[in-house]
Image (cartoon, rainbow, N blue to C red; front, side, top):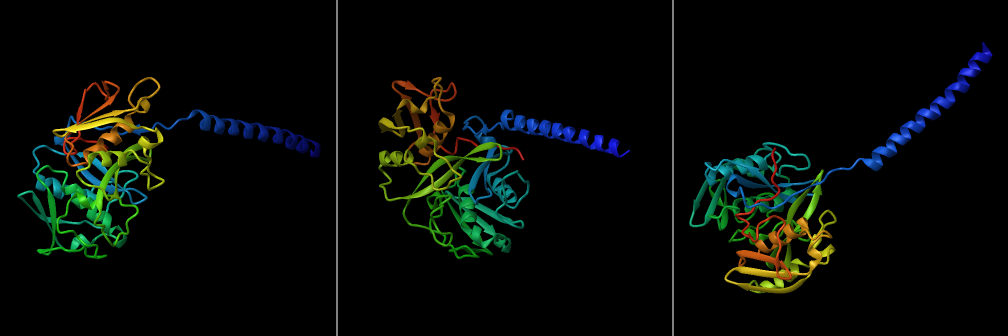
Length: 330
């Protein structure tokens, strides 16, 4: 009996080694051969009227504009109220978080002469103090996505607000996209007075890449389009989670001119892949960044004499009002 038990032990050890080897091989196979497909967000001009942008934060407190489907029949006032429902966590999307801990009610909206007046009750205070600047940015950029809105006024209990309620972040007299967005280098308790230039980069969240706007301080002449375009092509990455395809691909301007709102830019061939196709991310971040410069209405990007575009279109409007990107379905 003793000898038989010894044989079992001798037999069991090799079998354990065999199963261990099989498990190790399966692990290596999964590591070597499984690939995570990353979806790249692209810009579109086809369904802008059916889309509304909602700015939600990711894990690193970066605001990301998400384009959600809405009915064309809804008024802009109704869309703004719906926007606050999403900001309050109406529906969740993996990797993103609401800006309000409890529901924030937009009680009333009055839109006239290019001004959107938003009326709140005490529920406006349902955010974390450290998120205050992001809340102000999300409200402002969300409201000014509509072509009829040039600036925003905020009211708390019928009184116009001059500062945010928790951290006393000052609200500019003229509240529009000049406040910028995702100012990583700016403290949350103050807003800067310098010229704000918005540049788009990409960020991977989950299995998808999103186009993300971020603003940087610039002491440039707002009429100097050439200098602003040059800044866009610099290395503007201020967060390790964001990447600038324009810089890493060493894309440079060879020629540029602007007339009647049309900007023509000739780039070197680094915006093209090895098969001569257009690098989607580089193109989209460049076009969206140019769209943030107020004087530019349309853009043509060329390599040599050839107009380039990721799709079959020959040119594209660079009005942010007409373009959509980061389309999602909750």
